[in-house]
Length: 263
Picture 1 (cartoon, one colour):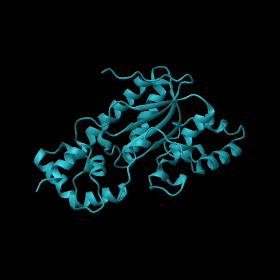
Picture 2 (cartoon, helix red, strand yellow; picture 1 turned 180 degrees about the horizontal axis):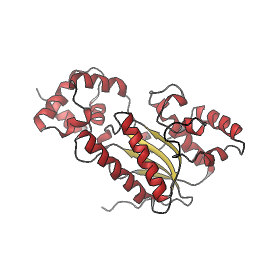
Picture 3 (cartoon, one colour; picture 1 turned 120 degrees about the vertical axis):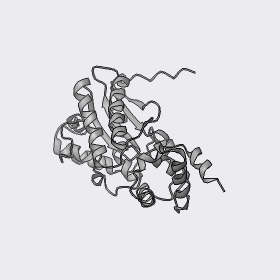
Picture 4 (cartoon, one colour; picture 1 turned 135 degrees about the vertical axis):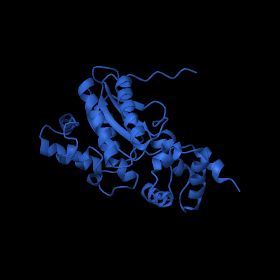
């Protein structure tokens, strides 16, 4: 059955999400995050896109951007291919990193523009990995607030601030208050959220202790017997669900269930 055509935004603005295949982690350290942002910045210059907000989570990315000189699909394809090449080379792995096509929703008015901005920046709070909006290094919140974190020239902050006020000081105060306000907005990845018994941070730490120096990203490319041995042994980690393990390792939950069901 042919894929449904992607809806075209009249404003050219989209909320985009890239997710790891099988919900696997796509960022393991600071270098990974910086490389992805560098890649977006490079194609911002080449494709003349505008980037209004962004947030990198462990296994997915949110971007609020405006289409440039080429289609959104072409730009996102370039970004994805470039980052996958870097990732596979660094971690000596192969295969798909991202889940199918990127997801997108059109943003065509001020209300939805602001709602997406708030949703993106509150992602770390909802995931329980940050207590305050400014705590999470890998989002555009501090950049919009005027604190120059890396990369400095990726964000088109003035367009965002003008949605609140023409006075930048007033705009930043209103932006901060707006994002701090709790909301029940749902967005692209809402239906994928699962209740975790262990936080992802605790789960990764427990897994790393068992791997004794082996990179998590390398497990899925190991010979089948070695890989399955590890997937079976993590069964003893209390509070680690099979779905969470599949996301961290980048393998299917059905494979983990099959391996862990052995007697």
